[in-house]
Length: 145
Image (tube, rainbow, N blue to C red; front, side):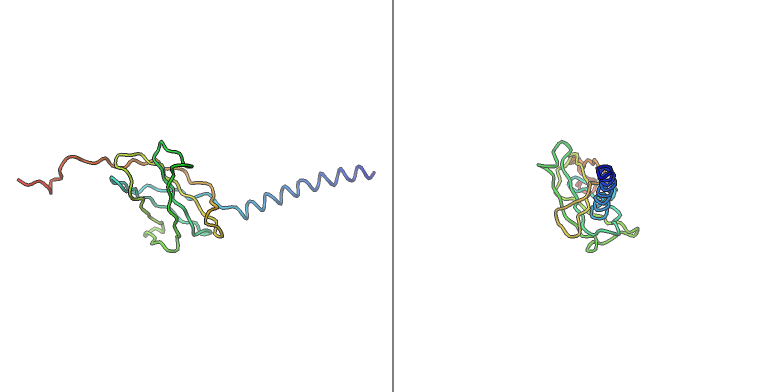
């Protein structure tokens, strides 16, 4: 009789502890980054925007050239949505500067945990964006006749 009760108790306790761990991960976890929207690109600048989350203010925008690896070549900038100007539709718009002309970049956004500057949630879907190539043709406003 004691052996049967011990087996029954173990089978009841195990799922409860698993559930508790799952609830802790949901409440303590950092959400995935919001979807990035492409705004524009020039020879050396890419502009993107996103809808900030109500639950988090800290974000990290990450980029790399398409063929590079995130772990070794990825670059980033941290942003606080409360310190940034929002567009008319409530989105945050930001630039990535100092890029190579005519290159293809991969861009993504991650949410940072409020109490940590290094713990981040899952990355947003990646955008693949080409910067413009340098033009060798003079612009009409620069031609002297």
